[in-house]
Image (cartoon, rainbow, N blue to C red; front, side, top):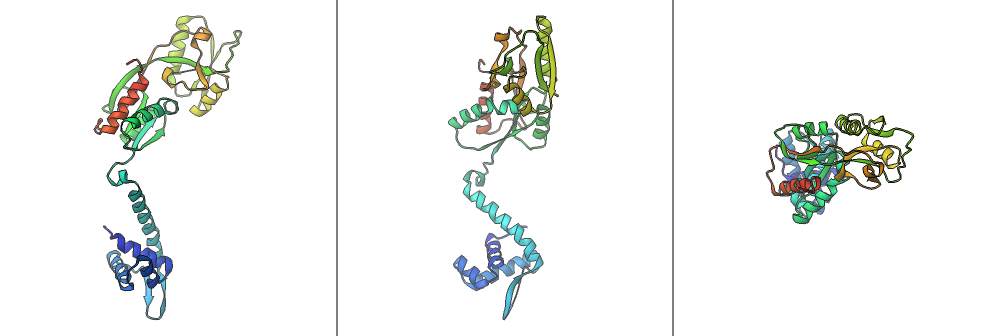
Length: 285
């Protein structure tokens, strides 16, 4: 059902002022025009919104009160679209999904680099675990995603080999009489496998393991200097630092990071953002 916004505006004005004459003055028009707008709207909805009668005060009906809520939302949305030319022109925000690790590191740099080149589109960022990002992409909740590679998928646009590093807080001090205090997210099986494979190959370091349910909580423990973990080198930001060389830890095998976009990369800004993400994740590429 398509509504005439003038009819909606007239109804809202009458409902708020309980006066046709005041509503007319607000709109800089005549009272009969306001009355006609409300009458046409009532006919379209097939219900009475405003109760009026000669010599009787204007009141809003129950149907009118219910519709008033929706009418105000509609007008607010119209105002928002008018304030945002890019939305009115069909340039909706580009919805980027990624993990918290990348959101706090490479994503701001990629968005900034892309904005420097085009500066024509807003971006929203949503964080989730890598396995959940694929679901969000398939459900149309996000447009593009940067995550650890999830295997072959029709939406996969690019894959980069990224170096992994041993990381801890910049105040971390290791006690050589104790095992390495490794910490990972509960579902970070691949990163745990990379870490223990490297340690087993090196053969010089014993390690203990602690699991964390939340990425922000894990980052807090690392920043406090209480544990060591593994993450992409490009994702290391202060106060976390690469401690591999200082502690004599073995090199880690690289890990794949991929960019996914359902339906392919079909607009200029998305293409630019994908290239910026690729450059951030593979600086040597």
